[in-house]
Each structure stands twice: as structure tokens, then as C-alpha cells.
Amino acid sequence: MRRIAVLSVAAALLAASAPAAEAEDAVQAYQRALAQVCRRQVTPELVRLYEAAVKAVDASRNGYGQASNFYGVRDPYLAYYSCVQAPGVPR
Picture: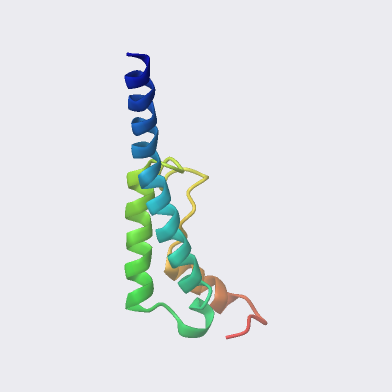
């Protein structure tokens, strides 16, 4: 009986960690693309990656949503505007 309880807790923990790992992958892919925003501007691919990262982070319930100070996905247009407004940023 105890073994079943341990296995059910382990399965629940694995199921809970799957959305977090998926969100991490989506955010990393977006951040790699975002690193080029000053040179390439905002592309449809970047917007698609942003939307996928937002969806994955919201599904993982990590970061407590876009209204939180700890939300980690930055809007691509805001990132590009920072490049345009910052003098001396290589493009």
C-alpha cells in the first residue's frame, strides 16, 4: 500500500514538472531569437515564438502570469523599441 502511495506522489510530481520544462524550452527558443531583434527587427517568426512562450509559461503557472513582476517573457516590440531608442546599440 505504501509503495502505491509513493508511486502516485512520484507520478504527480512528474506530471507537474512537464509544463515547467516545456515552458523553459519555449522561453529559451524565444530568448535566442530575441537576441537578434536589434539587427532583424520584429519578424513574424519572433512574434510566433513570443506567443508560444507566453502560452507555455501561462500553462506552467510559473511566474504567476503577465501581471506579475516576475514574468519572464518580454514583448518583442518593446525590446525592439529599446534598441531604437538606445544610442550606440549595434544593429
